[in-house]
Image (cartoon, rainbow, N blue to C red; front, side, top):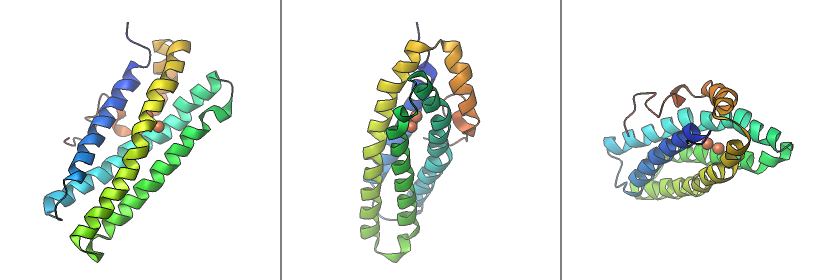
Length: 173
Ligand SMILES: [Fe+2]
Ligand SMILES: [Fe+2]
């Protein structure tokens, strides 16, 4: 039988796949062609309109539920701090991309790649911690209906594209 948190896991998988596509694109940046700029725009839109709202909804409803079940509001503090770092690196990446015209393409691409790999370095283990530590707590203590009603439904309010698996904004992969 499917685990109660299967839908959250699916959603995470979709987010991770999209991110890996973007990281791959960033690795192969050459110059600032229109196509590459478009790609970076897509990445920033994804980060700001999908990833950050996801994190925000999670803090309220998923972490909130985990902390409640573990009877300790400090239980999820470190993961909330991960979110702060993620947010900070996204802002950093945005600034680097905005300043693109100030330096040579080579230098800027390097900066983008460095910042992006900081982001990737925290996001990858973050997903793993959620999937391997938090979701099993919900799986153990809640039914599929409870997860749906108490965690997933309230989270939908935070990201318009959270419905289904990632075809919210009509963006390509
Ligand atoms: Fe998540
Ligand atoms: Fe998260």
